[in-house]
Length: 380
Image 1: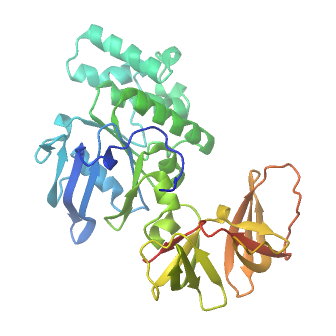
Image 2 (image 1 turned 120 degrees about the vertical axis):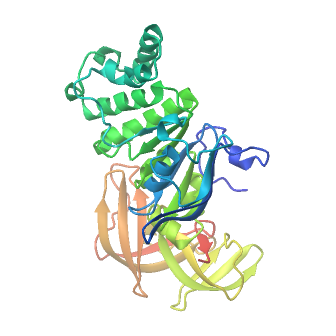
Image 3 (image 1 turned 90 degrees about the vertical axis):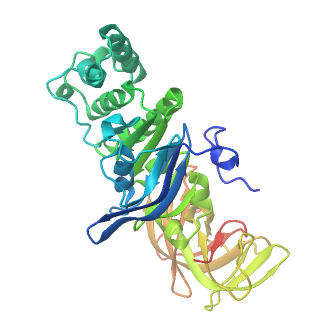
């Protein structure tokens, strides 16, 4: 099997037929009046997994999280955690904790007292509370801020306090609902990696709800993409990106060019697709599509090579057009190229050198080319 990207750690219980899921959503439906928020959804999450629920607003991801936490009850179906049916168990008796985007810190309490609050409510001995708070402060690197109040902290520091408070009670599962939404872009990117390291060190199961694709791709072991209350694909970040199961997934995660056509033939591992407008595509990844099928060829912008000269056709597909738009983003340049048949494709090139060897600009004639293994064929 071809590699589909880097692996963060050697952790893949979902690939083990003997592994039992830690959390199971079994045929869950949730209705609010006539509105179906979650529609007969089934999903399995494994112990110590960093799992992301990704989707647009209103797709049902937060509702799913709230049902696991006990704030909402399913209309039908059941939720199991470590083999136990959670039906009828109130939120405060569930071995889960939830961290909200707002952080919900007590403004009149210091950092250490915010972290200790839940432990005091549980009646933990004072000496044990002090040890646990010290441990949490070290974990999130806030020892020197223990006496400060929330308003004396930055947004990133408040986020760490909320996280420390959430894991102080050692829940089996930590639920994070848009946890980084209040942070600026640079701090959000830094905190993503901190969360990954923290989850790995604690050995807890993390489930994060987000609409940010990059956030899910950075942090999660696996991602479930939701649409209209249903799961449309569950896979690792690399599989989601490189081998999407449908046009919806391909278009939702990242940027993609989708070319519709008919698969004419398959021979010696190579499929030939024609779009009816003069473009022929040879591809090695046609999945289970058969000759005569209506298909969509999906290819990411970075898989396309842009050049002024006609490329060698021996091992690549190629088409000619005119540069319609250019966006210089520092690390890369994005081209919008209008092909001679009228369609516009997107291509991106990394700016590995400070000065481009081949300067292409608006309205220049240009070629795009790509290898037969650069894209994937979708049938739905």
